[in-house]
Length: 261
Image (cartoon, rainbow, N blue to C red; front, top):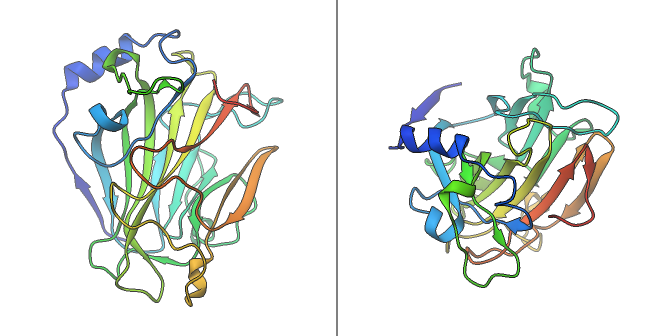
């Protein structure tokens, strides 16, 4: 598999200051929608660095997580290696393990996150790719109409982006989906994190809803992370516009919370 690293300008000094200036009180009760744009921070709260990009199947060894994830209240937080399948999901394996072909195919039963899992194609459009990016996101209060995004209250984040992919058998209609993992440990690396599903990119097309003749339109969303599970749910969630709130799940002390805060 060929891989390509696409660099973007990022202010290293600013990133260092972001890490040192994080505040436990600055991000409680916040929500975010982040996307692909270098200039997205003012609008979506995302501040992203270098893209690690790969074209073509079957998947992408996206490397170890940047922070620990706690998936079970009876187990300590861990780093994981992430296998990013072309077919719209992440598989989490041990850090010393190696991504294998079995980690990129459906069905999956252990430690997976599916944003739109079906038979996708990142080659048919000539531009589709799998992208893994490190960055930071701010999360504005849910009761605030105008997002007051501030660099000093961001959290480290990992973005996994299926960019310009199509349904297998459809070489024309491309779309974008993302999984974003956000460190909510407030610098302690205790494994608290948020999981977000994003659909579409600005005004770009969102995934099919399952009414098309192509059987691959019946993609599903959900996850199984230790005892925590949701789905599978068929047809993409919503909302699909850049002003919407993402689909967000919050994990604290290894348990999925009923509400995010």
